[in-house]
Image (tube, rainbow, N blue to C red):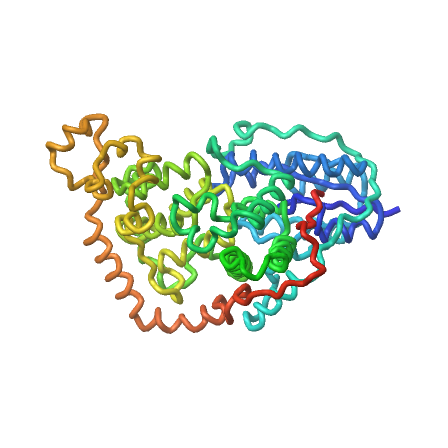
Length: 510
């Protein structure tokens, strides 16, 4: 009897799992999770990602055990582990979901494909998001996304366990794997059970805050869905989140205006989630080189390590920027607008290249999703060649989204005693006030590394002058054709309520 191996990667669930379903139809199944040292040693990984993944794996293993199946955990590089497993138990097929990951995972999958050909193992990969592999044209992409998320979710299949030919390994510590040490004390915890609880809480309660609440760092921690790390590790499938949201929309009374608008905006964001991932899928090189090659040389030769360190350590002297870094270091999360502001400050007044900034933020964001991350880094830095220049003034952002300074005072203890008039531009305080508030010596506030307005103005002038070069303008059409969106995302229309929709979300825990 043939045995199929299901290789779990960033799809740590049993529900709506196309690879698991296909394997179950072919015969006995062996479920495999590989801890790959080289993957975890990549410069975009940190120990918080590893610990979160292990929490998800633990939940997955418990769900499989309840069905009489083990989860075979192995430590080693993917081809090495597959070869070891094949020698112990020759298997005929390998099943997995497609992955739009970093450059390492892309090359690893190519190596696995070559190994499968050599061993005559059939490797079947299945889509798990609206991202389309080997996409020829963006035309019609939005319709295909809608078609994908509208297909019925796959139930957990009946599973027949294959013999487990190797001992299950204990996960090594992050230190022994050489993973970058960063694990915020208040980060979210992993696993499908937690993911479902967060989804239910958002759809039924917090979604009313979504529109209007996701921009301010004060309201965003509860107004945002907080589902992004669970999507990144596949504890929930994109399709089941979209469909659960539609069910909730259908259940709501017609007069639930705020919640309806919040859920519709959320569906639109899920569409953009895949739109940006598609960019990396179609052009993996944007992880390390400019999407528009005409911008090569714009910032690369002017790297200022002192400015990068000031940003990473939260010592730029711009209170909202430094408060955001403090929150990120404590929670592993920031809302989208504050992320955009950090990248804007890095790209314009600090004139830093997006790649080192992106690696720092990749390690810091628990929900790091390579396709979204690198596309957004380049868009906010002005190197796509097709997007409007987005420059966020950190002083204005503080006045708009933290007018009483509650966020700044919470995350920057030295700012708690400052009067409102100096809170967002403390570097302008006279020396007498600094002494009065004890902000001297070791307690002195950092001075900004540059004058904000003039540095930003110069950066915009340089970028716009670069953009006007004929050879740069000539490339724009090709980038629009390859990466540009074609139509408005879904979620703008109100769904009519169906009387037969159940009151519960109906999401199985496994």
